[in-house]
Image (spheres, rainbow, N blue to C red):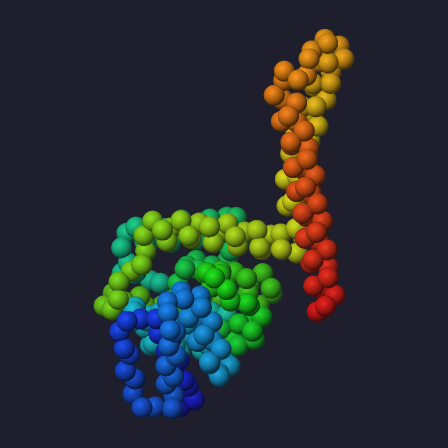
Length: 264
């Protein structure tokens, strides 16, 4: 079908110069320095004009022949369509990491996605307009959309062998991925109710300090034990103080959420 389209290429501070054909349908946006994939996607989205936006990586592993399948799902009423890479051509360690990450997301986050790490995704514009892009949270955009009530679906996509660029996967990426997953867990679970997390943690510490102090008071009253010789006294006091401070942090968080809701 002859539908209007545009291609937005984002060069994230590469040392190599990109040459593009002279076409009004192709845009090249260049970052002056490397800012990361999240910022590159944000830049691309801000320069895209269409009502349907597709994310693709620049290594040509994603196959444009899958576009019609994405469009068909969106026309069926879905707001976001995530790819599932069939017969992946990545290395074994990358596939293992991806499998473990998806298993954790399904079991802890109740994720409906089989391959959330697949970079080949299609969105209706309104989805991205409701999803603030920052840092590495692009990894969890499908999950965030699902939590916000958007209709999501998956389709199998062709995954070709990498012929351009090199994989950036390594131990640092694995560690960063774990941190991002932890961040996402707290954002999704406690962003609207910070006191639930901080209150629980603070309550545990306060209770521990209280029972330590109660035990020491019992020893002092009934056995005349000198408390200044007991390091437990300092520990109990510290736990009580820290517990109260953590609970207060949760209360402040609740006030911030409340004020932001009122502003909106």
